Structures are given as structure tokens and as C-alpha cells.
Length: 179
Image (cartoon, rainbow, N blue to C red):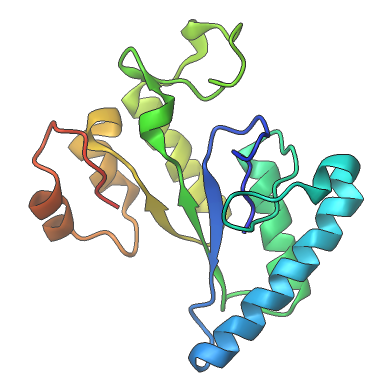
């Protein structure tokens, strides 16, 4: 839905909406379409020139400065369309791209960013926990054991997380996508 990696500065691949409270496929399509079009209006109001940017998969791609800004805009669109509680948000973090020297480089698109500000596995897990507290998140795609470790993954307590998925797809330490 909002795709900051399409040329923007945000180090998250994309945000997606999940109309979990829809009545069937047609209802889910209607909800998604209404939210998408409202997001376009919000993007034009808040980001002017970059609001017309479109990501590879058709999502809105303004140059958003932070995950909170993107999530606030998505939550505003969900609520304005009357779907609060019926639509959740997913994040595709694409951590493999941002993982550098054993840490998460949250500002990898800025070559002069200070490596001392990169996040450790524990700091990254805490960052995702803080997002879970503030937003109606339902999934994180591409969290990796290599980056936040087994304890970090388990401590997130994601609603859709199942240990069997992790162990059958990614033996501990290999860094394969688990969510």
C-alpha cells in the first residue's frame, strides 16, 4: 500500500493493509480500494511532489521520513474510511538489505550515516515492539533469526507467528525469512 523503498529514504520495504474484518473477497477489495484512494489524497496533502511516486507493485511511494509517519498515514486512512479494528497493517521489512556488520542500518540510504547509530538485535526487537504497541500490526514479513535472534522473534509475540513455521523453514542461525 505505501512503498517507501521506491526511491524514498525509509528503510522498510513496504507496508500492507489486511482487511481482516471484511465480509468476503468483494468486501476486502472494496475496503482496500477505499483506503488506497484515501491514502493517495493524504499523500498529496502531506508530500506534494513525491506523492505521485508509485512503487514496483503499484503502492503509493511518497518520500516518507519514518515508519511512524507511514503508519500514522495508513492508520488515518483506515479510520477515515470507517474501518478501524477491521483492517490491520503488515510490514515487509526486507531486513537482509539493511543488515550490515551484525547490525541493522536503519538509514542505509544515507551513506554518511554514523554506524554507531545502527541497531543491535535487541534494539531492533524493541523498535518492533514499540510499533506493535502503537499500531494495528498483524504481521512482519522477512524478520530474520540472523538479525534479531530467536529470543527477539519470540518476544515480539506477533498474532500470526507460529514456531513451527520458523523451525521448518529456517534452522536457527541461517538467517532465512521466517515471517
